[in-house]
Amino acid sequence: MNNTTYSAKKGEIESKWYIIDAANKPIGRVATEAAKLLRGKHKPTFTPHIDCGDHVIILNCKDAILTGHKLDQKMYRHHSGYIGGLKETPARVMLDKKPEKAMTLAIKGMLPHNSLGRQMLKKLRVYAGSEHENQAQKPEVWEVK
Image 1 (cartoon, rainbow, N blue to C red):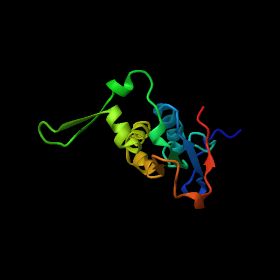
Image 2: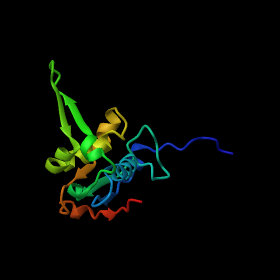
Image 3: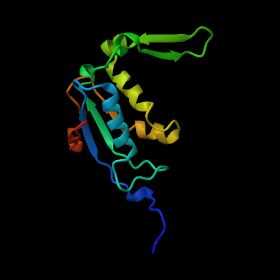
């Protein structure tokens, strides 16, 4: 009986491309599916300390929705590092001007907060509309449940 845990090696990892359509879906639901694909948790060969995830393309971010009162109450905050340098952007403004950034920030918060998470985030492509430039990779459609 073999009691060793399987651990994927760098050369054994095969990466696929997936498309997620965010139109009329909550940002958080789309972000969790994207984070799962980027991490590789949908694969039986998942290894926590290795980037074994796939590439993800998210389309129609401008049509993604926020549920409840989040559109009026949620604030996106960042700090310049200087005294009094806190910048706040309401969710309504962020979704109007930079819907790609709102989606990217939601996904970034669901990935590991270290160099591995930054490496995974590089495999994410987010578009406000339905056009993308990755047809050559033959991406498959991934349905958000």
